[in-house]
Each structure stands twice: as C-alpha cells, then as structure tokens.
Amino acid sequence: MHQLLVLRLYDRRYALRLLDVERVLHMVEITPLPGAPPEVLGVINIQGEVTSVIDLRRCCTLPPLEVGPEQVLVLVRRGGGIVALAADWVEVTVGWQEEGVVPADEIQPAPPFLEGMAKLADGLVPVLDLDRLLHDILPP
Image 1: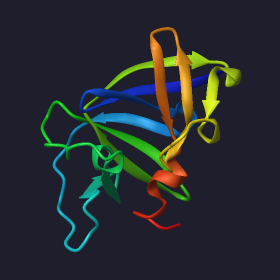
Image 2: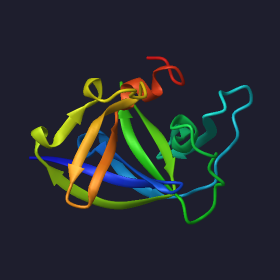
Image 3: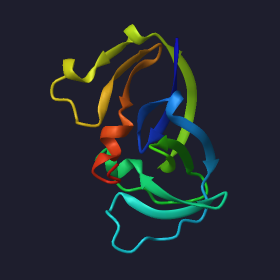
C-alpha cells in the first residue's frame, strides 16, 4: 500500500505521493526573488539552506495564493535538494492501492503535471507528478 498526502489548493483537492514529502511546515516569511518565474513566490531559509517556494496554485492554473499565516509549506525532495510548495492546507494522509489510480494517459485531456487520478473513499483526487510539474520552473 502507498501513502498520499491530500492537500487543498483554492477550492480543490490534490495529492502528492507521501514518499516525495519531507515534512509540512506552517507558513513563514518569504523573501521575493527578483526575475523569478511567476510560480516562484521567493525563497526561505530552512536550516541554513536557501529553498525556493513554489505557488502550487499557479502551477495548477488556479488563482495565485495570497500568502498568510493559515497557509502551509510542503517540503518535497527534488534532485539533491528540497523545494517548498505553498498550499492552502493539508487535509489528510491516506493509503491507497496502486491499482486505485487511473493513469494520466487514460484521461483525456490530462494536464501535463498529472500522474493520475486516485480513487479514494470520498471521491477522485488528482495526483500531481512533481517532476513534470516543476520541470519548467526549476530545471534539473
């Protein structure tokens, strides 16, 4: 069985593979990064490491996040480092069977950042493919 972290972006639910998640933090002050793509809110300091903060809403073509203390940062592993994903909040961690996901190539039209749709007890939830989602924003 695999684990998903279900989070809320605007008025929608999305999921990340828990295996990609380092931890979840309360929102902290973000330092703007001049010249960065619009999806990059800026940078933060995580235990001495400067870490980019990505607005997941913008990545998923939703209205941009208005950063406030009620939002969260989901720290994910990418390559050799950590990236912070800004989200409205984290709902729950759930277990699911691999066969409980409809792959993105079976969904038409599927956005390029979609790994598939998880069939959960309370409905379908899009599972984000972090590599594809972040590829154009933070090239490898």
